[in-house]
Image: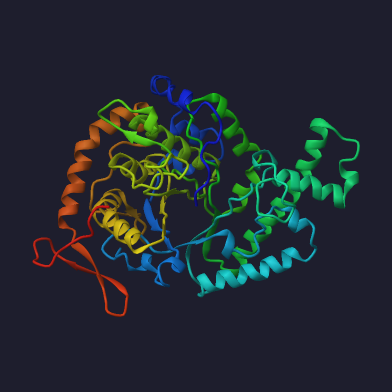
Length: 458
């Protein structure tokens, strides 16, 4: 679920704009939600706020064990009713590019047949409910956002020259479409033909998903796309314009939106950030999360928004930071802030690749994630409205938060810390035990027991 964050130039120059971002007037989540769509969540606040578990295991690296299933969530509000379908298990997703679909009249039929097999394997119950995310990231359905890196490996190679491959495909199959055209006219003709195929691929797959598992809420990962520099109009204006003009067909078709707020910067508070370590003030990272979730709410047409979170730093960051576990500020903000922007909840994602990874994630989930999630959860229930969690929710509505979120963060920090500490103290300590047959299991004992132990920090 990891898309490249920013490959352009001027990274350090943009970080230097932190001060301007924090001093400038804020585009509030409330205002964003009211400026397009019906924005029901953004206008009224989320009526429920639930964390869902979407962690997977790379079983070929864990001796066939699905280690994520061994992380105990039974005493938490985190729900295990979410599924993710990657490019390799969601039909015949053409990684070389969409030209493969257009070149083969039977491609879609074979793709949908394979898609049904993959869905049936992961969701065998035809009446199952929950949420499913289709994670397609190699190429974008919009021509303007499709990457294109020159390659000489041929059209069927898994590389990144998607636009070049599409143009070669058109020249080989429908040359009249672009014959005699140059410049913008040629590019527009390629764009129209490309998006006709990509939209059909996305929408036909989605329609089959809904037909095959009708009680599941379906959506695509990473829409709308993530934008960190929401305070900079050069980046924010085109981002919003694409969402509200070129992607309405997708937002109209899905059941749920899955934006991503992964930790692409190291958020720090109480000291001066170090740009060399990709650090930013906590308030700037807070704005990134609030603005991205609010933008998803704005274009959601009233549909639920679940923000994808990941408790490791993004792989686009330098070695030594990338893939390390996030600090307390990043973790807290990922869990708590989407609620203020109108999200229905968060999707907790990771892919466990080793037993050490499993032990670290289990420790973080039990000691840090569950207490914070439970403190802000608003659980749905039948009858007279939603069921609130026993823990305290963050103070402030979206309107109040938008006035000065740095002030709101400071005013509630001590209360949040106290609630998290109290909840953590009540949680059982977990230990990892390897049985003689090689199976890894969890055991638990209340704090203070002679055999209580927890995986050590890495």
